[in-house]
Amino acid sequence: MKRLANYSQYFLRNPALIKELIGHSNIKPGDTVYDIGAGSGTISSVLAGRCKSVVAIELEPRIATKLRENMADYPNVTVREGDFLTMSLPNTPYKIFSNIPFHLSSPIIHKITEAANPPVATYLIVQKQFANKLLPDSDRFTGQLGMLIGPEFAVRIRKPLKRTDYWPHPNVDTVLIEILHRPEPLIERSRIPAYRKFIIGCFSDPKIFAKAPRDAINLPANIKPSQMKLAQWMALFAASGK
Image (cartoon, rainbow, N blue to C red; front, side, top):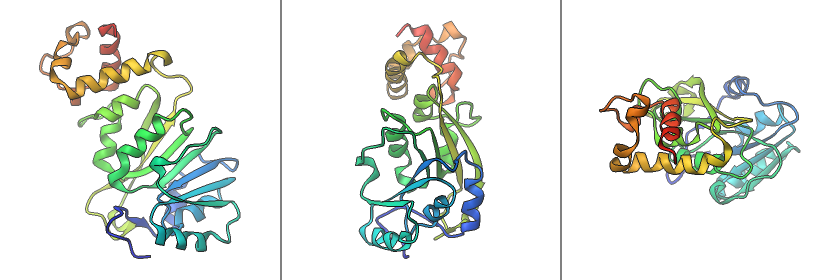
């Protein structure tokens, strides 16, 4: 189906590749899996053969109609038309495996990691540059979002993709990332809201970062927030007494 320009998404067309990508996940036969931005259902159809149930979500009405037609022969696939960002999430365990619109990567990750019942495991295809900023020990630059979620979620890149794996071909490199909900957070759960507030403040206001006790954990004087690793942020938060 032709992609509408209003919806920034590039679709994977090869079921064999999708099977390979799902093979890099921990999705099991008893799982419920959400497919965000399901398109015509290529990923959902492969997931249907690998797990108990699939919830295929599609915002664009014309594509959602085609999705329902394509999923008619898959009794364990439920199609939901609408905006994932405004949908309620389940109270029971679930996972996510999706090729999401790239421009919605940040709000989607915010939604699932801030949910009262976040997914046990999330697998998203995103831009490589965006993924690198989520990694706790990136050799490049880290980002606010990655440091926000790090104490509660383990993030890693599972597999790079080629631009020719999509149609139309994107002009950026992409990867499959894994976001696992930690059974026990690296910071006491009751302290997570204060930690998040501290991270947001340091990234958004240079004065707040300048006042943080960087000497107490031997940080270089000229270090920038985007140059810090997750372990350094947790140590700085602990030293701040927030």
